[in-house]
Amino acid sequence: MADTVRFIHTADLHLDSPLRSLAARNPALGDLLRDASRRLLQRLIDTALEEQVDALLIAGDLFDGEQEDVHTAMVLQRELRRLQAQDIPVFIIWGNHDAETRFLESRILDLPDNVHAFDGRGGRKHFANDRAVVHGVSFTKRKTPESLLGKYGKADPHCFNIGMLHTSLTGADGHNDYAPCTLNELIDKGFDYWALGHIHKRQIHHEQPAIVMPGNPLGRHINEAGERSISLVTLASGEKPDIRSINLAPVRFERLPVSLDGIDDRKLAYEQMLEALNCCRDSMDTDVLIVRLELEGRSVLASSYQRDRQTLLVALQTEYEHRDDLWIDSVSARSLQLPEEHEDAAESNHSIAAELQTLVGKDLLESIALQEAVAEDLKLLSKALPPDLNGLFGATPEEEREFIRRSLLPDASVWMLRQLEAQTSVDKDSDEGAQS
Image: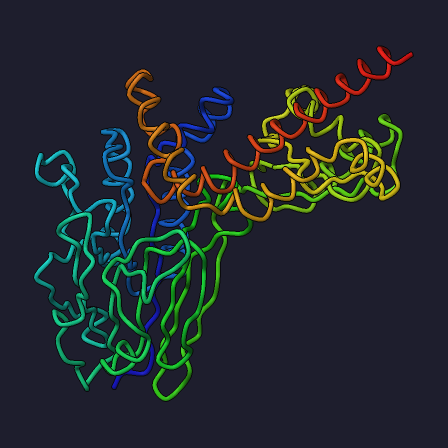
């Protein structure tokens, strides 16, 4: 077997991912993000050229699906030709999002000769002067609940073997089953490296043979916060694969916890938020940082911030509207609580609200029936929206469920509870006034 082979493994670029819900809340931010995936693509090709890799592997969901922008197709074509000029091959499999892409059928996207896109029948291609071989199978339809492993051939004993597969493995939270398989089934194929795609969280599932989910290289919303990456891989005979994570994302989402514990002065609390935002921005090596502020701790300001969260958000956004490198996506005050002595008083005065809050937190937000009912309501609402806002609540059923579970229901419950508390206070004052 040959001594070494080097390649880049990435997946789930989701070129032109719509980000409609974010753009609807903040059109200026939507414009800024619109070409972020194209800038990422350019950086990916730059890295492949700088590292002089033997190949680039894209393990599914290169495109987002129906969002097929001709400009993006031309950018992709231009960038792939840069690799062609240096004789660097590109291997692609199609995933659930781009299985039915019309780009290739319409000839809008003319892939250069250095690109090999595997079809649904499967196959293999040698590269690096036959030092390595790539095995790949593409999705032919969006929903692929059956295993695809039977379409992969045997390992070639004379070179490094790399398998490309878009899969949910044995399942993951928030993801439907796509081409499911187990780690043992992948190990038993006898390949040296499995280049996976689909799950957007980076994870090395097994070290030798290497089974790697690189995660998506560009976060698309606040639930994909934190560092994103691609993998630079070196396979060497008789050694454990060397896998280096490289961050290329021009935009990063981040959840920023800010403690207001013991701070009861509104001015001091606001200064605490600004200081945390500035420190976060200074510490992040990214072109654009998009932040969700998450207030926590115990403060007498808890009720007012939970009730007037939108006013606080507008104030913070105004602080940074002159900058294009820091954006405030939203403010959450769900983890901000009243001091215990105030909480006890609130519970005794507003027992109905307190009981309802317990019920909501423990049972209601995790109710599948409620989530499904809300999803049906959102479908009706979506039909009434303009066509350019299709997908406002999520580009896929999985994203819509995530939006309902993590954003819509918690925010609605906070609003409902605060309204009830406010009404309880009014009723209590009215009763006391009548008695006096």
